[in-house]
Length: 317
Image (tube, rainbow, N blue to C red; front, side, top):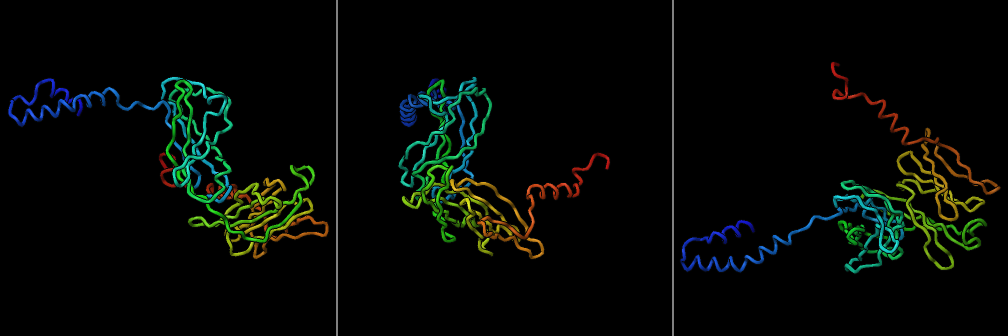
């Protein structure tokens, strides 16, 4: 459109000198400098194309937000990744419900590497920040630093809602054993339930009893409340919890006193022989009933046993 106006003006259109057309030419002459400016200062292609996608849009308080960042190098040249002043080249901008900027979250990805022109890289990262512990609505942007120009390129803004889980069972207090950080302090294992759009989930949280501070919160798996979870401590103050995750399917998790997941096992009921946890006289936890199975191996076997469709048959058959 701008080039058509320039061409029109250069040819002296409209050709007659009627008052109406003189007025039109006057208006065009006023618009001409603006058109020239828009042509000369048109949009410049971004050197980096950045997008952000969250694993899910609802989290509970203190749960880490997992995201996938996709970056494409559109600069036309290779460059070395790296952030300003030795910081990581990838960071996150978080805003609250009032669009107020909170402190930036920087990743630890400071090791430089070559990012070839035209290539795309994807990074799965955990966005962690203590101030997201509060309930509310937040917006998250990924910021990628482009060293050759000293600019940050930002992604789309993803929205996340932070809620609080409902306490499911009575918390279990325990002392941190020797060999773990803060040995001797008293803490609590807390089991929480959160209802998402169409599923319930079971969470584990570690709370310091003296300060009340939440030290760690993460999801254990899908929860079916047809039967209540079984949970108890062993003599080493590990938490053992077994819960129904689907009809006849159980998940059995062992959590260490530092909050790390020691192990998890999938179990299936066998002819109404339900898996159960028992505590021995020596305070060891044993499991009885059901049988262990591997869901991934079971799915692979089922897919292998499926008959091939006509489109998958070799030519001529």
